[in-house]
Image (cartoon, rainbow, N blue to C red):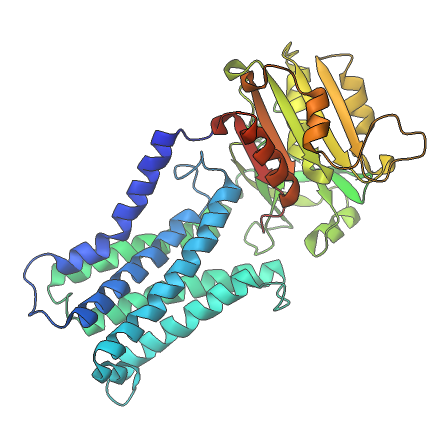
Amino acid sequence: MKYSLAQSICWILTFLALALVPLGVGMAGSLPPGRDFGVEFGVMLGFLGLAVLSLQCVISGRFNWFGAGFGFDNLLEFHKLIGIFALILVLAHPAMLIAANPVFIAYFDPRENAPRAITLSLVTIGIVVLVATSLWRKFFKLSYEAWRALHGVLTLGIIFFGLGHVVMVDHYGEPLWKKAAFVLFTGAAMYLVVHSRVVRPWLMKRKPYTIIEVREEPNNATTLVLEPVGHPGMKHRAGQFLWITLGKSPFSMQQHPYSIASSPQNPKIELTIKDLGDFSRSVRDLAPGTPAWLEGPYGCFYHDPGTAKGAVLVAGGVGITPVMSILRAARDRRDPQPYILFFGNTAWTDVIFREEIEAMRAHMNLKVVHCLTAPPPDWPGEQGYITKDVMDRHLPNDIENYAYFICGPRPLLDLVEQDLRARGVPAASIHTERFDMV
């Protein structure tokens, strides 16, 4: 589940400590004579920039041993912010040095020292391109696959040439042991990228899947049913997500995250995917028998029945997919706990899984509240968005004893989460997942 406050603080302190490792190595042992404050401050920014860039490989690497309790969407937001911070550090490093002493502009002059100038220039240009294409991928009209390949190449290149710059400048890294420490730190970061892009797909080859059914759903959605081939299948918790690669080989830039809609008791994996363009548009044309490779499970968007009286589930559109996994798991294990589902859609014909959700009421303690923004004339249910007034009419009195799960577009999550916090629901009881992560 989500990290406690103490666990979160420990992870943050660990991140800060690791970010200071290159600086600590540079400042250890015998030191050269001191220089102006501006020069030394600029050097410090360079060490921090190299460390923060290296740590990005941990944050974005989808390692369950790191940050599993933060939620992947929260880690991704943190990754973006840290990327901007790293850009500032890398650009401020030469700017501060040149401002303190203009002689440092020669570091960009290939006539003075070509390798040093080339590495510094490549790092500076590379990180600008990396951050710009990450923040404005759609503006640059980059497909997700092309961006992912570019992201990996630039990350490895920036760290490698950043290390080369540190070694060639050699002011604080003259002893061999310091060079070895810098290589070890940055080398570990680069290995994490290689592990994510090479080692992990190689491990996935041992556990192939095949698509056995392609089912059309309302609201331009498609459900893929995948069956494990030669192995028992993925063990997951209801509400988690995975990354899927289609084709004969898992070594592909075409890898996309989707929530698991099926119950953990079902050895088959079901993914319900809405047509939002690019890859998702091609899903409906897949044929049974198509090979698939699954990486996961990931995420802390799951319900532990022993920690709460019941669960309140809030979903918007295709955000129902992880919620559906939670409901199917509760039905399969005959969970007696109360479940309340708020499900927002545009029209009644857009409601995914509506027949199955209705049938669940006969097998579990489930209350369903449909909210439609464009209801039919004779609609007896809630109209409009899932607002505070709507929740007032259906939430139990002892709301602090329930666990809350919200999945959908950002406006829905922000609105409902703020409302729940205002009602006094503890933050640890509120679980969110955005389906527009990448």
